Structure formats: structure tokens, C-alpha cells
Length: 143
Image (cartoon, rainbow, N blue to C red; front, side, top):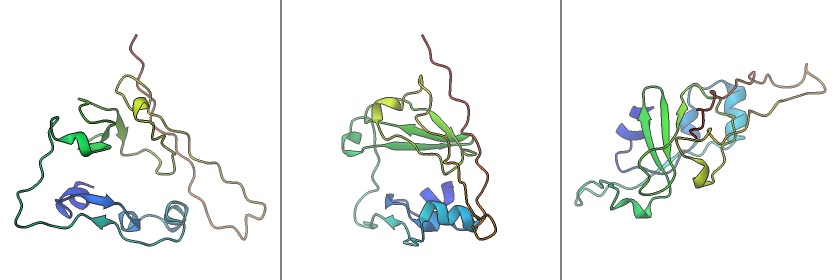
């Protein structure tokens, strides 16, 4: 993931695309991309400018920050926040995450729903669906 997200695009991404799903099972790729195969869009390289380094003082233009860790991806919800919760790499990619910044703090559960359950009327003609996997247990709240 680090090679794809960082090494391949040191300037960063304006959006991630279906190319992030290369190698995923067909049913999962269809569920997540819905037939859209647009590649991600990287920010253009500016060889004459020094690389962007964001700090607490310069991050005011960012909406979200993401830090890759061995156990998962840390989601930092707002400029100036020191930390965020870590979403485990094994989290089902079909989980729906809420984008309310105030919910993404280390002392709260990860704001996500369980993956949607799929039911079919005619299982013989329906494409195979990956079995749902629970999101990791939320961290306990501190009191």
C-alpha cells in the first residue's frame, strides 16, 4: 500500500481510482467500483518547486490526513489534530465510513457500519459475493 500511495505518487493524490483494486476478486471490485474503471488522479509533479511538507502550521488547507502504520491506516480528521484512530488493514473494504470529522478521534469507536448483507432471489444467476467480514473491534472509550 505504501508503494502505491506514496512511492508511486510522491506529490499525492487528488482522488483514488479503481487501479487501487488491481488484484481484488472480481465480485469485490464490481461492488466497490460499480463498473467504473477510472484510474486515480495524482497531483502533477512540480520539479522546480521543493516537495510539499505538511506540518501542524501548514496543514490548514487539508481536510484529512492519513498515516500508514503496520497494523493499519491512521485517520486524522482535522488540521492540528495530533492523532486519529487506526483502521486495521484487514477491515472489509465494503464497510461504510462516516465522514463527520468530529467522530474520528482516538478515544471513540471507528465510525463505520458493517458491510451490507447481500441477498439474491436466484442464487444460480447471481454473481458470487464475498462473505462479509466484521470491522475490527472499536477501541474502548476513555472516561
